[in-house]
Amino acid sequence: MTFKPRTVTVSRENKMSIKDLLEKKITKTYKFMGEAIKIAKLTVEQVEALKDLSTEDKTDDLEVMNYVIKESAEDFVDITDEEFKKFPLDELVAISTSIMEFSGIGDKAKGK
Image 1 (cartoon, rainbow, N blue to C red):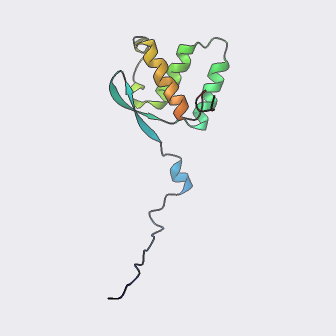
Image 2 (image 1 turned 90 degrees about the horizontal axis):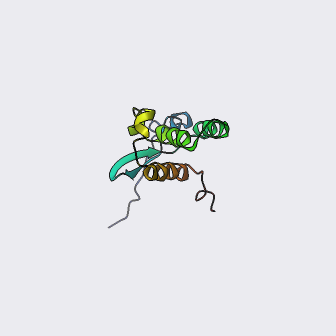
């Protein structure tokens, strides 16, 4: 019995380009109020907008959480600002914190 090495052919046709990755979202499942939803990492563009929003004098913490959650969790896109205020605060803080850590920002992401 002789051993024949397997030849593996790699097709370059299916390889994604860097530009293709611009549209790709990195997601994970998060349990919000007992229900599984998908959250996505924030992009650099979204983080910069978040920084701008956070430095405005009239912006409160609830607006920042609203922005973070709506940018990351597709299930929240159609939630109005008034509806957003009907969720338990601790649940909103928890998901917002998880999104920021998943995106590489926040205390735990910085190793503090």
